[in-house]
Amino acid sequence: MAGCKDSNESMEALTDRVFTLAKTQYTILAQGLPDDKTPRTVDEAGKLVTADIGWWCSGFFPGNLWLTYEYTADEKIKELAIQQTHKLDSLIVKTKTDHDIGFQLNCSFGNALRLTGDNQWSAMLQEGAKVLAARFSPITGTIRSWNHDGGGKWEFPVIIDNMMNLELLMRFGDDSLKQIALTHARTTIKNHFRPDGTSYHLVDYDPETGAVRLKQTVQGLSDESAWARGNAWGLYGYTMMYEFSKEADMLSKAEDIARTLLPKLPEDGIPFWDFDSPDIPNDLRDASAGAIMASALIKLSTLTADSGLKGQCLKVAEQQLRTLASPEYLAAPGELCGFLLKHSVGHKLAGSEVDVPLTYADYYFLEALLRFRSVNK
Ligand code: GLY
View 1: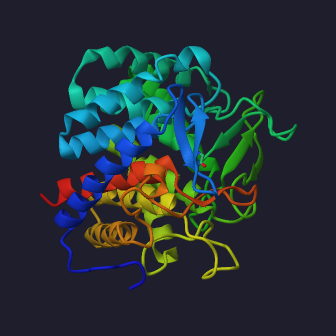
View 2: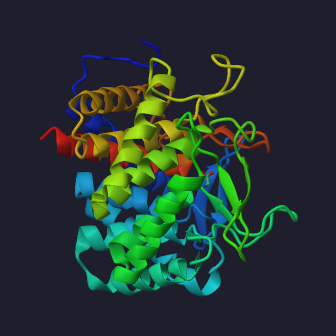
């Protein structure tokens, strides 16, 4: 099977191998970073590309360190995790500009709080949840994803990715913030999905009436195609919303998405960057979408009452993790400036981050390995 180096390796051994590598890689990556920057990717010349702390991905590298600490209990990794998390201290003041405050804070401060129990991390999370909830409109029934108007195209854009940011509200918001998250998720069920079960990337709303103005893609192949990462965000988002709310519609939607996506995967489990690419099987895979799916499928396997689906979720997730842990996807020690995974796709048609390492591919890969371990204990 493509990408599967040693199917006899136990998942325990594989997990141990990946987290041992993560310790080495992230020590290298942290050393290469200027004080006020977060890692973004690696360029064609093999050089580290960084971003400002306002970049939507700035929570993932601290999160990767926290997850590595969770597995290894290595105090040096914890020190790095604390250092990289503190880089985001000024985030709310500097960048109250979009929904990604959810990713940014939940993966960094959220893991810091979960793993240390230290309340020094709480205030930022609670403040961030309020900032995110302030983007909600009771007229559209959604949180606005981006402030910009896409060059005059949008009035109130909401992307499927926004489902992920609801976790900040469910974890750290009061009841009124949790209701906002649930309303957003219910509205998204109504407007973001096609009859075939796949999702649109962006739905734009009329902020005066709440009517849907248009449905389109930003990062996918076309408006009607199924962009792999967007669909993976939806799978993860509804699984997470059911975990926190126990609202039946959230679980049904997560199950529907899983049943829609699973048959679209190639044998090794890693999706092509857009499920509808006419160039399949000769197009690029997106490791990030594979990692997000794996993490979501493992969680869904613990929540669904459908035993057939449960088994399928676990089987596919294991395959995805085995493929990602193979040399085709996983860096050798010292490679990739300290990232773990190769072959992710940020925005293919814009020529941005194409077939590269990305911090969030690493994040959901590590999270999925930890989840797999916990369901198999
Ligand atoms: N949320 C942006 C992306 O998935 O690329």
